[in-house]
Every structure is written in C-alpha cells, then in structure tokens.
View 1: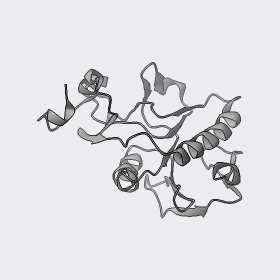
View 2: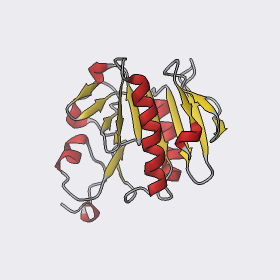
View 3: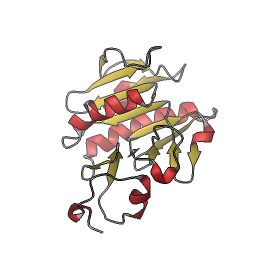
Length: 191
C-alpha cells in the first residue's frame, strides 16, 4: 500500500503493522506523520555518544535503553494494542519498568525520552511531541538541537505538567533527573 495514495484519515497500530513501505512513519492520535530521511551524520554521532553513556550507566540496573527505530506505543487507556492510535520512534528512550517491554518495543510511557532535532521534524518535536509526552506522563524529555549545541530539558512536575524548559549549552556535565547518579559528559556528546 502506498501511504501517500491512501485516503484514510485516522490510523491505528493495526494499520501501522501492515505497512511495508520503505518510509518510516509515526502515528500521533491517529494522524500519520512521515519521519525525516536518514538523519545527518552529526545527529547520529550525538545519538551514539549519548546512548553509550546512558547504556554504560544502566548496565547494572533493570532499566533498558533503545534507539530509533524502536516503536513506543502510547495508549490513552487500556485499549487493545490494535486500537492504539499513537506509535512514535524517539531517537533514544529509557524504560525502567520491564512490564512495558515486549517483542514489538514499548507499550506505555518510557521514563526518559530524547529527540535530536532534524530540520524536517523540529517543529513536531518541539510542539506536538512535547504535548504528547507531557500528556502520556513521560517524566523527562530532552530536545537536543545539534545546530546551536543546546539541550532543552522538560521535567514532569507533580501536577502532571512540564514546567518551563531548562536550556543548557553543550559543555560540562548534565544530570538526568529520572536516573539519579547519571551525569552526561556533554563535551563527549557534542565533540
């Protein structure tokens, strides 16, 4: 099926599983979002350097890290998998509840999500996904901008809302609030 030729307006995970196109897609509240082409080399270097530090820290914990492409299904309630209408592929996710993991990826909110901006998806990451991740209870969301070497950190407050974003420059160390004891060496990430 060519998704571009499809006239269906809303999709579910059941539809998502049938797609065999070479393109990558995300669903957010049933709406189809095309993923960007292969990320830039800088995007990938940042992703790998950050993932390596997180992976090393998590190696003796029950938490697991995954990098895109990795499906994260975000149900609104207890609907069956085939009725879930939100499936995203964040650049990096950390899941500390093993019950959320299965052979298809993660079902439910990861503890920590990182998106690395690409020109074609930056607006979605800063607006649509920010609102989605807040709504679904993702405790910590980092938006990394490889163009200006900054990180916007969003932390879920006790009221279930992200407060004002905290902006950090790519230098020194940055603590991951949801993973106590982990400090990311930003010099390594952004070298």
